[in-house]
Length: 197
Image (cartoon, rainbow, N blue to C red; front, side, top):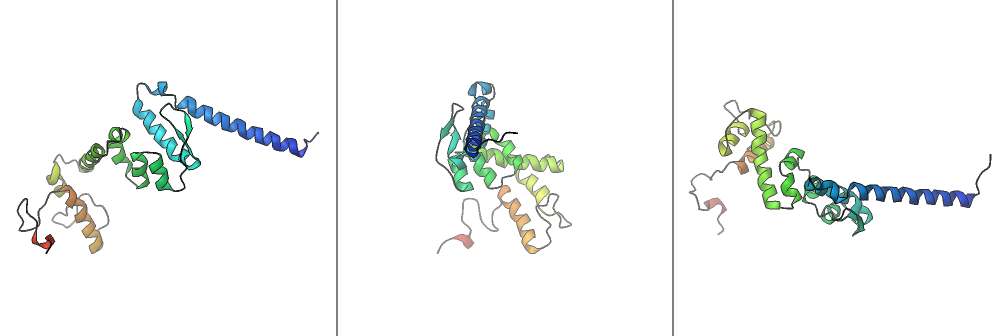
């Protein structure tokens, strides 16, 4: 059996690597061709964001034409999310629950943070209804499922409730969803406890 000289083997390895890189670039370019997404542009945006979140670490990105282009390289996950220009990437990096993301996918893809936040908030109510079968809405729903009942146990618990801190977390989870005024304050006034002297 004949063995190749050392220099030739390295040249062959280098050519093999270049060929592999070529195939990866070709695959991404063909898979991300915008014409493939004419009927579902949101899928193009989602896939492009996902690819860019990874490619940004090596200074590449998929542009609007679906082609690889050079871009700034990121060295941290935070930089990657910012450079990928993806609200969805940033929300995932921060640990946003996948079901919340599912409710506001269209708004995230159009980079409309206000409407994405609104849809995410609505998703909480929908999820509470799914978990409990309740048909209430707004503060009535929150009170019925997140606040402790007569036995001291909420129907939907965010933690075990074993410590005063966890009990406070349960109550605080319900508070932003349910409009409540501090005792003794009228609508449109600032409670004395938080007025500045």
